[in-house]
Length: 186
Image (cartoon, rainbow, N blue to C red; front, side, top):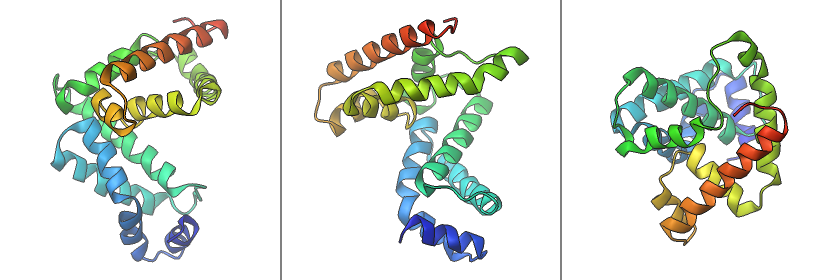
């Protein structure tokens, strides 16, 4: 079933929309939650919260890609749950590592001025990602959007762990330089 057909079901307030969303994207969404949380129960809770959020936001929202829209929702919910749990080693230690890797480049701002710049920073990061070749962008998204381990990425792309780790390091370094050239303090 196509996204626009499922979205039309949400607009009609047809309960089948949630079932169809689960059939189409449930495995993808569960994987994102599991990669971030490392806990099946918490992942399922985030998945249910995601379906509720989809139900409550479509309409008025009409996403171009249901997969991307639902992926962003579950990712944000899982990160919120992760932060609130405030445990050191959940997710096999991947989340602290992922956050540390990116923390040196894009740390969260506490001041209102930094919050205002957040949208500009997001646009700059998006532009940077579009400047990468297809595979480097895919590795980066797998690691920092889907929260996959280096080993999972290596297996998915038939590369060694070291190859992926070095590629990610070089991409982070390029991103840091790219952002510094645009006036961001890193």
